[in-house]
Length: 220
Image 1 (cartoon, rainbow, N blue to C red):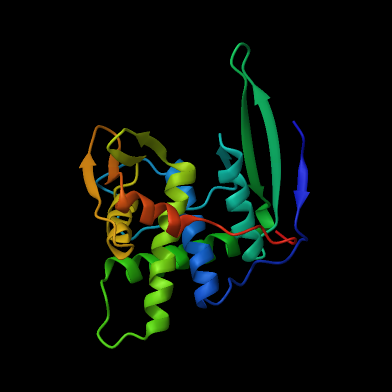
Image 2: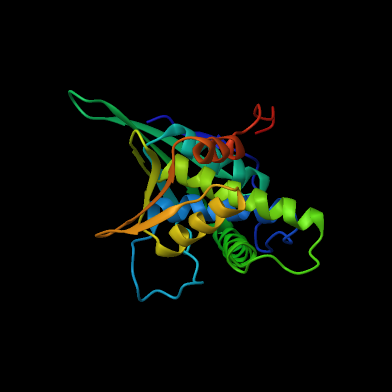
């Protein structure tokens, strides 16, 4: 295990104001957590956030690095541990840990980001909304799909790109987000999970283009 301390400590007793940049970072981070921490249930309130855990684990480094980068944007310091396991088939496990002192602000920011981001996407277009707001709604949609592609269960077949998620609300957001990205999606409920899929071809290409990231910042 190789512990790496990232970012400088900062008090998080007061969450960031939800400007658009903060909102998109907090919403995508919340989507990443929902991909790996939230079981499917019909009883949980639809708008209720996943209470962000102090420690979260990923089996993909790129998913862990993306969440680390988003938390860096939100001024939430994290510790990144890498562990290697397995005998014949080796694997890596990536753990991100937020200190107890940071937990209240971290939870409040992600809670607010999830609620407002969900409202922007599920609520539909607002009459008279500015062009800037439409652009940011598209970025929220791309963030939801980016999180699902990194941390959801990939289900790739010749004719579809599919994502398995255990959170019904996230599945609904992915369908709505695909529509905003001009990519029709299908939701198929299953036992313990939902499969959200888009057909190969132009729809898949639009999703992949929208979720592409540029070169990482030197400070990320």
